[in-house]
Image (cartoon, rainbow, N blue to C red; front, side):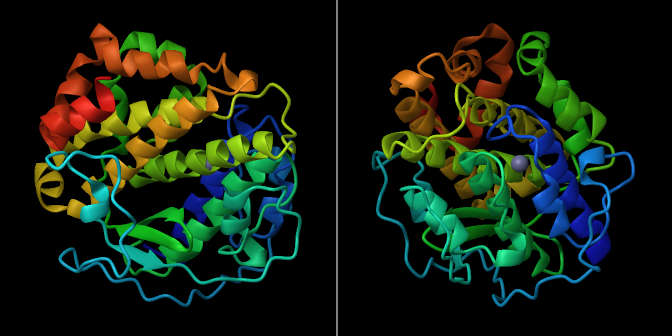
Length: 336
Ligand SMILES: [Zn+2]
């Protein structure tokens, strides 16, 4: 895939998620991001981004990704809460290093905000609008650099402390994902369903871009929790957890699409499986932690998570998750 197309996908991701009111925060200032991007976005997109270009220069990444699925991670994260029989992504994932950069800006008392900024080159940082949105959008920049370093546009998913996972792309099943989502959840998450799974799915065929968005919402929610704890939350009553719940649902539905159209990928790609498990675990963790805070106790993420865990129309998604990840994992993360 050409650099132009790859970068255009990235710009689309930025435009869509900033445009959505639920993307990190209800901000209206995507212009700083667009100023730093390379090729111009498609003309049909958000007019707030008009006139943006840095002349097509793409930052040169330093890491050379390695996708050997059998290679052990150089420094595996500590074991998680998994039981000995449950799939623990920490035991299976291979994490690559992200280059570090100096950052002298305000980190607002948030560790993850600082972490993301220190692993995102200044040209890719997004430093306007709400602070959790800054973390979200800057992480898109970090990921874009890492992804563009690969020949095949592999997905890259940021964990923390300068580590993240590369995942090779499966078959292009994006346009199929909507077929696995029932009418109630379509209505519940209507804006993101319409935008990501209907409108853009035809021109944005790589399903890992859904996972990229999910990964960015982890940054939104983690930073939101830390910002509230440090007394520097600046996004009023916005809900920084609804994106986590929506993409947990969409990406779990995409496992059904892969099961049908690319079963070998699911069978063989442990890196994808481990990354999916990481994102599920993080989503559960930050929704649980965040909604304990008084400010976020009414987050719609709780209802949407329940729809995935209990609703009849989600039964097939749950069954697919259980088959794919194993009963012990499913009981631990989805049935409690
Ligand atoms: Zn986003």
